[in-house]
Length: 115
Image (cartoon, rainbow, N blue to C red; front, side, top):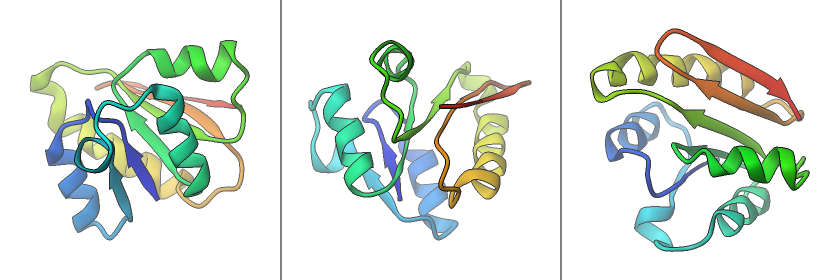
C-alpha cells in the first residue's frame, strides 16, 4: 500500500490508483495528523509513505525509524510530469521489496538509501 502524506498532489494519488496500486490518502481519511502518525499508518499497512515534507528525513535518520520506506518528492510544478514518471519507475523496482528505503526523487535524479 502507498500512504500519501496530505501534501501530495491528488493527481499523483489518482494516477497510482489507476495503475492498480493500493492507496491511502491522509488528506482524505485523517487530515491534520502528525508525521509520526503517518509513519505508524504506513507501518501498520506495510506501506510506503510518499511525501513532499523533508521532516520525514529527520524522522528516519535522526530518530532511527527503520521499518518503513519513504519516498520524498522534490520538484517545481513544471517538473511534475517527470516526477510522476520517476515515482512509477521507483515503485516498479521497490514496491514489494522487504527491505526499507529512503528515496528522494527530483526531476533529474533518484537517490535511494537503504535504511
